[in-house]
Every structure is written in structure tokens, then in C-alpha cells.
Picture 1: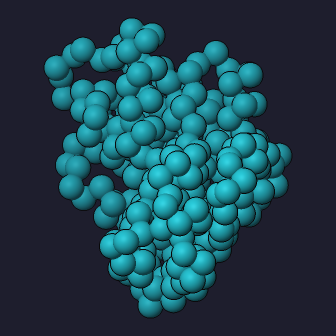
Picture 2: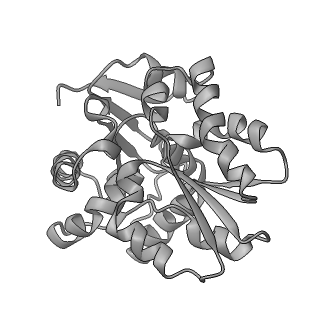
Length: 261
């Protein structure tokens, strides 16, 4: 059981930002990553569609022997993780926007969040924000078009720069000193966002915290892989592989397979 893989799924390649954090913290663990690019982005879909896709992804990873599943997608977490936990006997780790830590650290009292429509409209996100102090102002911004550009390898395009300025500038005008990235695709945009905001604005994503939680759960359940053999890291994708291959070019031991899924 200890040598069985950590399963990870996302609506596309964005969740590789989470995989990299997990791999860095737990380098001996075997992993299986499912990239459901064909159905990306999840953020524009209905709750039922997101649940159905999450169930399909979960059952694929369970069939591959996953000992724990990381839902490396904010939209799937906020809309489907409770259903998954209620219906499958396996630990699930979700990804939630780090609104709470940002709200505790802000000095201006204003925090921006860049996320998908599906995350911002979810009941879980509403529950989180409603529990914050009334003195904290949350500026919500749907990052429409960002996931599609990332999925198509256009991270450093003029179109991406234009969209980011359109979304970030209003947050700066309202004196946000923290901006939370509420989609696992968005950490790949961090250098560009930081260039727009300047050094006085802190950008927060959830990757490191998620990796630590995976380690905690595996430790609690005595599931840490103690083998010293080279780990197996397999990535499944149901659309073009080129962008994913570029994301993983520094990880030579990774294997990428096309999946008709």
C-alpha cells in the first residue's frame, strides 16, 4: 500500500504546479497525474458537470491504484470534493483559495482574488468569505480566458499580458496588498502578475500548503513510501501533449501517455 501512487487530477495542465510541490516535498513517492484537457476549463461548467467529471477522474485514479487523491483544481474542489469524500473510501486533498491567510496578513484591509467563475460562485467559497471579518474587503475577479491561453502554451503572449493588466489593475486601484490565486493554472503566471503589481503586493497560491497536507495525511495513515527505488511519475492527458511536455522538461523521469478519455 505504501508504494501505491499518489493520484492527482485537474481540468488540465495547471495542477502540475501542485504536482511539482508534492514531488519536491515527497521525492520518493510514485505519482499518477490525470490532465483532463479535453474538458478544460471546468470553471465555466455547471456544478453537476463538474461533479460528473470529478467522479470519472477519481474512478480512473482508483483503478490505477491511487492511495490518496489530490483534487488539484480549485473549481473541482469547491464544487465536488464533498461528494467525492462521501462516496469513496480514500483520502481526498482539495485546493481552496488562500483567502483566510491573506485576510489575516493584509495591512490595507483589501484582498484580491483571481479565480474561475466556478470557484467564485461555489457554496464553499461563499462559506469561507462569509466567515471573514467585516473589516476585510474581498475584490473578486473571474480570470476569463487565462486557463485557455495557458493550455494553448500562450503564457507569455501579448493577449495574456493584456488580460492580466485588465484583471489586476482594478485590484491595485482599490489598494489590495494581497492577491490570492484561486486556480492551479495561475501560479504559472506569477512572474507576470508580480511585474504588474510591483514588490509591495504579495501573491499567494496554495501549492506548498497542499503538499504539506498530503504529507501529513500519508504520515497519519502510515502510507509514506519508504522505498529508495526511483519513483514512477506517470502523466495521462487526453489532448495534445506538447504544452505538458514543455511544463515537465526539467523532470526527465516523467512519463507522458495520451489517454482517449
